[in-house]
Image (cartoon, rainbow, N blue to C red):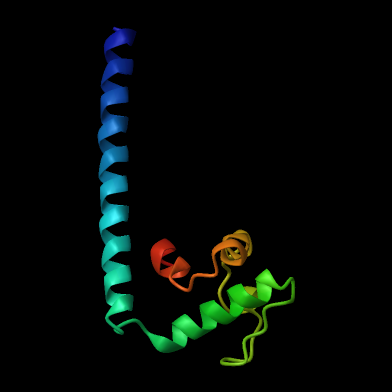
Length: 100
């Protein structure tokens, strides 16, 4: 009985994982297409870009757009590790791909 349960669980987990990866890929591609056609929101893009740039320079991310610190405005601790990727690649589409 336990063997059938674990086999069933593995199949369900695989299906859910594949659906998650497919949906993530589709929405990431759609986000990049939207950005490349100049339809992404400029203000949010500027806030994220400024925060990533300041984190990559190891400075506190104070936004000159809304006059708040990044972690005080919206708690996104993922921005700090993403800044390392930003330093290595210097690509502005990074947060379009991660859908921040």
